[in-house]
Length: 225
Ligand SMILES: C[S@@+](CC[C@H](N)C(=O)[O-])C[C@H]1O[C@@H](n2cnc3c(N)ncnc32)[C@H](O)[C@@H]1O
Image 1: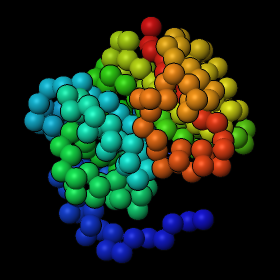
Image 2: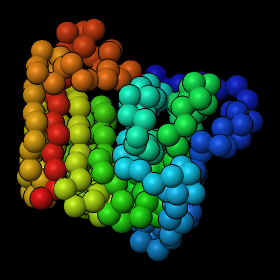
Image 3: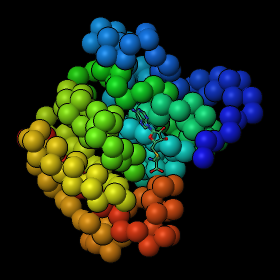
């Protein structure tokens, strides 16, 4: 079901300006933008310090990134979400809680290269990305070749990707793609909540919903070699 547009959306987004570092599309064609437009973030300016930077793609309501940022005060976090109506909840949460080490990009992940300097990210989180099983939509999956080629450019040497999903076919597809792109598996479970990795896990909004229905959660952490 489509979410109803939030009341006073634009005014509320404007009020979140202190945590919003990028918004919209630099031009109509995403491919052209990704290749030609550069508005690279200066992390020192954005966060007021130099620290490891981690990125979540498709942050949804921001519950995960807010909790992670509170746990990891020595790290800075960028949260990407294409839907303005959704990212507003995440931004308002971070503003209300006074969490200083999170900033948001309200953009499509396809244009991350416009904003994120190459080799600057320590870890990328992909939490419950839409599986998009239809063959014709493979390019839009957040672990397809198109996106892995982007992530490889943005990650530091040895940088990591952490994926969680309820969809085993999407998980298998992603594992295959990680291997094809030369990533090494550091940790893996097909039932995260009953595994040794459960104690450190931060449950996302979608994860809570899937696991309340008894669905096992797949989890993998991979590193660039
Ligand atoms: C299924 S929801 C999961 C939300 C959250 N990560 C969680 O686990 O609760 C996927 C989110 O990814 C966002 N998304 C999908 N494709 C995207 C893209 N190409 N760039 C940025 N965000 C995207 C959607 O708008 C949606 O909010």
